[in-house]
Amino acid sequence: MRAISGLWRWRHNPLCRATDLAEAWLALAALLLVLLASPVIGRLVGGAAQDALQRSVRDQHHARRLVTATVVRELAGSPLDADPETSTGPDLRSRVLADWTAPDGTARRGPVLASLKDPRPGDRFRIWTDPRGRPAARPLDPATATTHAVLAGVGAALATAGLVEGGRRLVVWRMVLRRYARWDQAWDRTGPDWGRTGAGS
Image (cartoon, rainbow, N blue to C red; front, side, top):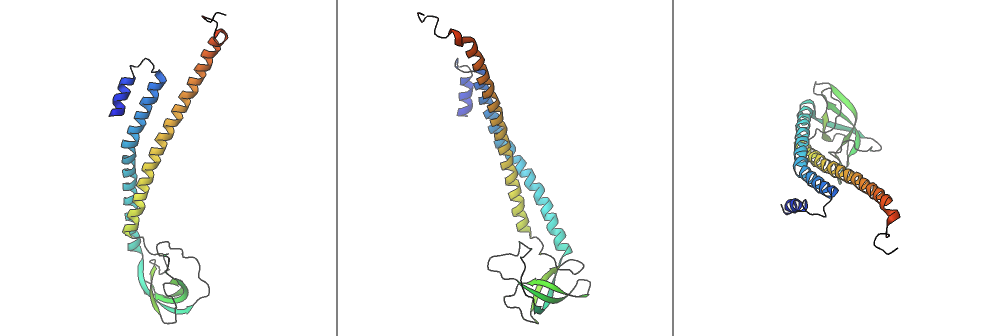
């Protein structure tokens, strides 16, 4: 409020140029946009992301099944874990050949990643499969989906604030260039006579 009242008094100051007043109003408009528009846009984007991600969570949990697999033998080499949700620091995952039963009742065998430190034939572990019984990544959990949605909303709000500030700086830069151009024109008109009037020359 103090800045607004100061701006209101400054507009009648004889030293105030039109460009100064325009810059001040522009700064005020940008501030209001950052304070009002950014949270609204962040909320809208975050809400849309939350709806989409929670729908994806429901679809994944509906389509994927957790089944029990049995180790046949350990396989040499362990590729990078493609599922970032299960990649925790100390969690060791071994690549094994395993048998499991698909949701439709058919027997399956193939290489999978097992959360076993020292897998041995006959060891049992749980894996996620798609409706056809093929190994699938663990479905996204609701808490992780909410975290992603919050990050999307915060990112949208920050991007909006950055765009507003960038637009303000661009407009001010153009105004300063115009001001310099007018100064150059005024100096070109006044420069040749500078110091002559009243200087005794």
